[in-house]
Image (cartoon, rainbow, N blue to C red; front, side, top):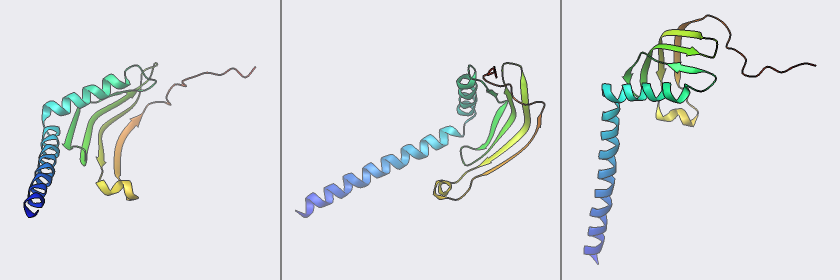
Length: 122
């Protein structure tokens, strides 16, 4: 009976160890230049057909906890309406439990975004 418990504990600890190793590996991969470029490209592709397209020159810092978006541009069908040289984003796992994340940005708003739908008042 003790042997069964010991085997179950070893299996359980092995599964937990493998999961922790996978999470650490994925976190490490996110810190590479290739992964950041892929993330930047996916953001641009996902927003390309929407009412507001997002373009980034680079993603720096520790993704996803303390990162900077460099060369942020938001545009609509008329053109670019917001540019920011550097946007800082800080997040912690406790942010979901009521603790706020941190966001700072210095940018230029050239105009208001174009209206998505124009309704007639007639």
